[in-house]
Image (tube, rainbow, N blue to C red):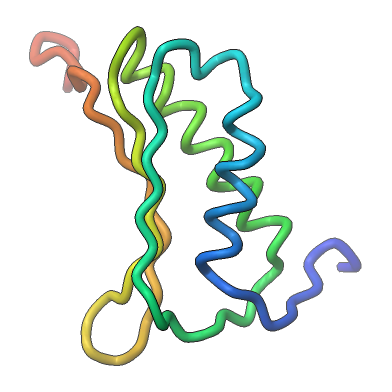
Length: 102
């Protein structure tokens, strides 16, 4: 499919693009946004726009969970010793209440 074209891209730039877009999203409200990217990450072979969209969706969901005054962290890091890159979104919200977790 034409929308799934892959090319070489930089993981740190993917994170930065997503964060630039997030900073203007009103759903962040009072939620702090943190960015963590390891230096020297290997390049990715992926659809950069799709990766940015996924990070945006996850971060907005995380912001909803961390509201009204939590923190959302968007991260690019090495995973394991084989040069694999991990993109992740983390929030410090309260989580799912034990009584409805199941």
